[in-house]
Length: 139
Ligand code: ATP
Ligand code: MG
Image (cartoon, rainbow, N blue to C red; front, side, top):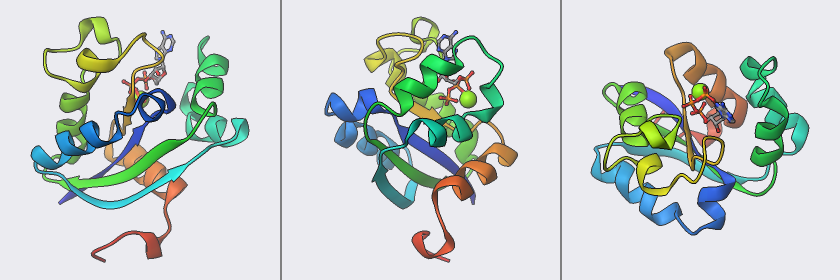
């Protein structure tokens, strides 16, 4: 079974989309094996998105990610990383497929409601960024 890190971003939390998004994950065969609500400060958001530190949108992105609470969770199933990215839809909601979270709810390329790991290496980094072993059920 593969694990991936998912985040309901501050726009998804403030707009009352937590229940809807969790239901989509559960109905798609994911097991939620860890979950909590956190509010990152600017420095913590910069650490999480360090791979993007040279991008022009880095400062705005890390302001957004530290603007309010997020729900962070570990999702488990076969091919969790790629299946989660399918359910999320493309980064740019205008290119996202019908029925995806971003197609249904994103309002711009930055405020796109959810995050998902994009490789096994980033999944390991991101899971360890937010969770310790005690917080992960089933192990
Ligand atoms: P995420 O990493 O959040 O799951 P992603 O992998 O689809 O999304 P990335 O390329 O890793 O997309 O970008 C990280 C985040 O940065 C995006 O989800 C979005 O919030 C923001 N972002 C990406 N591209 C842009 C852009 N051109 N302008 C503004 N914000 C952007
Ligand atoms: Mg990404």
